[in-house]
Length: 518
Image 1: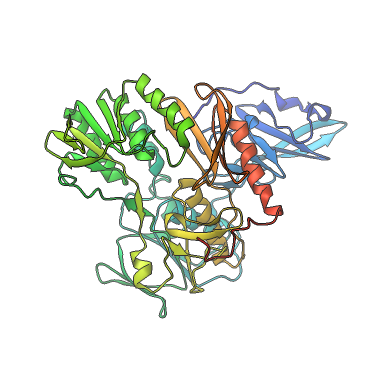
Image 2 (image 1 turned 30 degrees about the vertical axis):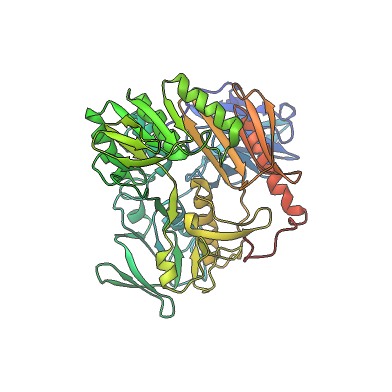
């Protein structure tokens, strides 16, 4: 994937670097030949790994070291200093170098990269076969993790989209804007899954027979499983108005959705965007980048009102207005016609194309028919396991207990990736609770907002800095910070993530009462 690839400053490490030049726990960048190398000292140990995040090339020397990991400031990917192993949103590990300290000087030895996943050592135990329903963020991360952990049993991914897995967050950003080629969209190359022994079926599951460990596909084929991961994700919410199914009205959830929308833009001049959250606002920026006149219509008073609040939402509105986007906020849409959108007050907006971004709905129907517990999502325990021991759920459909925020279901790409990783490890017997801090980012024009934590409701915003410059906003309820959003303060975002992780050492919130808490 693309990224910032300017050569970093720092010493040439060919002749080594004095150990005294490395401060404990402080990342230091240097270069060895064409490689940017990150050095981190921890007591008597010195680690040397690749200095650029494998997700989008973020500068890890601007990140934060915590324990034996380093975190990327861009999208919070996390890497082991010892092994280079990644935690989402990065997929690929970092290279690492042998290190030797002689006479107070740190010398780098052989560069090491991980072998292909399928050639790793075998892992004893685990189920005979694993079936994953869904090949999005959670499903694809689970499949890779199984192989990364050394599992050599059968792995099958079932997904209705032949193109999956792909980088879904990019659909409403650079790809829709026309600044990213489609070659960036697939998460892996054409033969990656075949090379690593992961079978893929393009199809939908019509029935789950949990008692017999059997799936029936919509074409009648039957698939048996020893362990099953449900990772079906979510679908775009339907807007129940006349004209929502007209050819020039689009939702944006899949790669095919985006392709059809882009094809329609060739003859479009005016766009109306319905909704002012992620798809709506990112889509508005991308459509404006293509030169369309864009109007956003939403019942909210400010964009992202329920997620980011008035301070960040107001900043994003001003940003869009500076780029020529118009807003009709506090308004409803009652119909879509061939060349215009009808608002609740009877007025109309001319539209050659309409983008509908009014949220998403989890795909829980299969789980419901199978008798699994569903409460706004598939209910799982801290290990992401359903009430049936051989079935797990992860990603947008999973409703899991978190000791900091109570029971949660969160539709974020990074959360889904990390849950897929945890579910895979638990399928192999790890008994590892999912405790990662929720994180998402949104990119609009040249502005990136990072968000950590989970605030369904809050009674106070604490703002540090200038919302029209760089700032941090904490969302507080009952005197306790539930989440933080930052603009231009990547370090503060990482520190907030670490602070939420440290809350696990404190007593759980009073409202916490186990997996059935709402």
